[in-house]
Image (cartoon, rainbow, N blue to C red; front, side):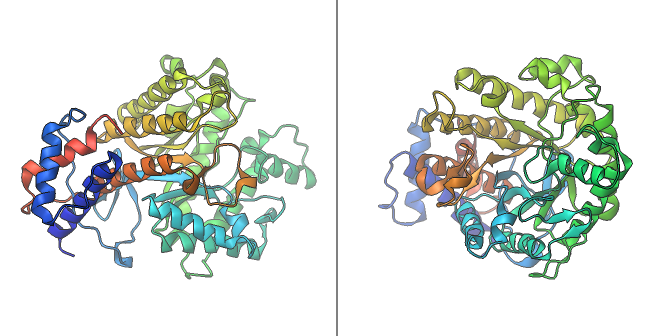
Length: 469
């Protein structure tokens, strides 16, 4: 398909999404001219839109393997094939465990298919299960080959649906083993460890972690025959899910661990990006920024957003958003205000101090929260998406977000309260799809040197940036 046709079709799809969403009948239009006229008329008469000068055009990106290249960080953006790559994605942490059982493996494919259908392009999931039921790593450097094959399946299946993966390498929390399991292994080998935080400081536990990283990165996928460290399906390696080291509020212990492990991952794999997995709390190195923390305790957990992300080898910043956990379980407008200010602060810091993209890699709201309703969830999601678009139109560091979390139908027993089942959530599904369409247009960057013309281009920008999602 030539570039101009691609531009027109992508734009047409986008316009149709808007008309459909607003109850406008698009099915009666005959031909491109009538559609263009209708779009212009809509823009001229709708009170809901104001034109903003954007900066991105659209350009064709192919679908074959030659175009399935590594995503990289360049300044404060992600790029692939020379084009920007803004992220609309999701979390589903249990994919490897489900793939390890033939009776549930199909749910992995079902999830990727559904995610792809609403335009989601990045999934964050666990590439660890340490010493637990269906463990990947049964003991230090001892692996269950069948579970490794399950992870192979997840990676290969993601590629089929053009979804890239952020693979997390260990947990801060006890679920799926975490740092506590490494401490148990250390004590079983004769060490005398008294704190789970010794995971970060003890040389033996550091060596356990490095050996595991080496095994995962050098794994040859049994489905694709591609070594993980060479596979563009992997978007990035995450050092740890939500690292905290409360035994050292100064942040020095965790900083040392991050610096060593980011450099180690890069020594094995210079092609892929690395991120830490932080929640985003500000620490002692930036006392003026601690005002943005959700509570005073957040300053004492041993993390330090700006300092941590200045470690060599870290390619982009990660931030989580859980107002219902950090501020109060009862939802309110204050949660929305916090979400916006939390995001804007981190986007600003990623631009001013880090010079890198930032992904809001977990955000959501639990149905178990007092006062919850689906309309509030949609409003929260719109707040996140709108804040990101405000950054995108300025060429800022807001590079994407990952919902916590997306589930296929029939997996309710795994739900922590945050799960979104698209088939059961049509309004949320529409919001996600609409944002994906906008992101896809940014990522396509067409030159618009076809008959669509500059006037139409500005109309498209109106759609991209208008306030009402």
